[in-house]
Length: 123
Length: 110
Image: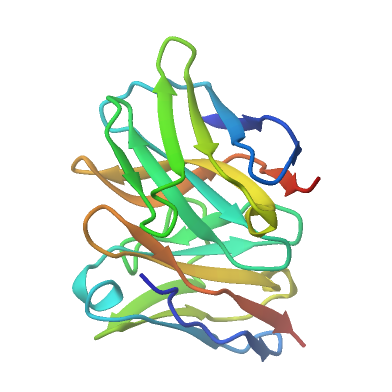
C-alpha cells in the first residue's frame, strides 16, 4: 500500500522560506499515472489545495499562492518537495502531501494522504 | 477562485439520513464531474469517500453516496452511525488544472 510521509522543520520565522519533503514508499513516484499534491489546513480551519506536480515535473499551483510556491520532484529519491517563500503567521498550518489520483492521465481526487506535519510561523 | 460553500454543521440521529451540500459555480462544481468528498476525524488526515461526483472507492460503505445538480454537489449518508461523526469536505476541479475545497461541515450524530 502506497505510503507518504512529510518531513521538515516545524518552526519557520516570518519572511523566511518553508521547506517540506514528502517521501513516497511502497510505490514509485515515477508512475506515468502519478500526480502528487500538497494541501494545507490552518488550525481549526478548512483544507486548501496548494499545488500539484506530475512526475515529469509539470506543476500546477493555487493562483492565490502561485507567486510564493515551488513544488519539485526528485525521482531518484522517490520524493517531492514544497517551498513557500516569504511566510507569515497566516501560513501556519498542518501541511499534507498526497497522491493526486485519477485515470485517463487526469488527476481527480486525493488519496492516500500523509499523516501531515504542523508548521508554525513565528519568531 | 473562492472556496466552495458548505454548511458549517449538520446533525442527525442514528439510523437517519443526512445530506451535506457543496455549492460552487459553473466554473467549478457546475462545469465538471470531478467532485470528491473527504472524511476527516480530529487529528487525522482526510480520507476520500466519494470521487467523480458519485463513485465510491473500495472499502467505503454504500451508505455514502454523492450527487450533483447544476452548481451544487451533495453527499448523503444514510443509516447514520456514531462512527460517521467527523468533518466532511468537498473538492472540485476548477479548470486550468486548479482545485478548490469547500469550507468543511461538522457532522454530529445525536
